[in-house]
Image (cartoon, rainbow, N blue to C red; front, side):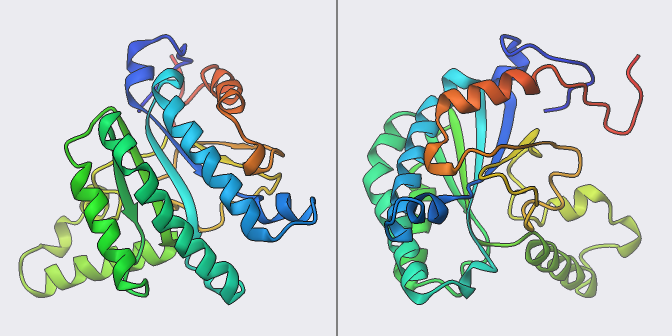
Length: 247
């Protein structure tokens, strides 16, 4: 959503098009602080995802993109990685009916190649099953990295040029965007990172070039729709110039 001046949240254009991306950080820390296994924090985090998705229409969010598992997360323990993959599958199976009924379209971005074939098949199924929905667009990044995505997109463009189907001199930003995992989505307006960390962590590097950022100390399992509402109220007062000057 392109805004060249502060926009109030009751503005129809704001409510109908807002794209918020979230780096969901702090699940393991939340559990460790309580003396619990890290996977308990991830399960609690999945509950927050459900709550936030359900609240999106009221919050004015049409596009919600969540960073669930990065290309670097494979370095975690085998137990945690397997637990997360299992959690992804359970979430989809549990929420599929609700998403279809409530108009949520789900997409998965990232490199699926290393994932278990059964999980890949589940991703294909939920994308197809919710493909007609348009009320809320939920995108979950799994085995995703911004640099990896750009590399894959550049490789695809190079192959098109080599095959003679694309003129190298005619390549534009829009050309490369069309080969990104997010080609069906608008660029994010706002990127939120929880847990107090102030890094972008290889998330939507191309797409978030002009996004606003918010870094909150709230750990993801404690992040509520009310937390998001407060963030959006402040976001609605920001001036977005996109490199220009407000008139």
